[in-house]
Length: 73
Image (cartoon, rainbow, N blue to C red; front, top):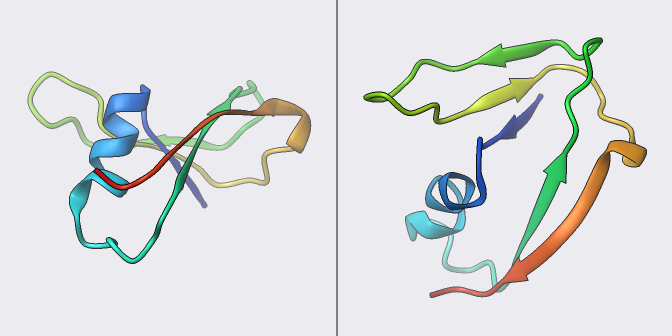
């Protein structure tokens, strides 16, 4: 299962921005194109914002784009 955030800020907040994984020196930000055939699960909302999307199938490399890398804050 692949876990995705709806935007870059949310993805960072739930991964590298948490502080529980300070031993990781750099994080990569990827954009994923969801297809109609993907098995998508939208996780419960927190407040009014969408926090997490999970995809249960393999996402082909042709639908993934590397956007940036970020070091610890």
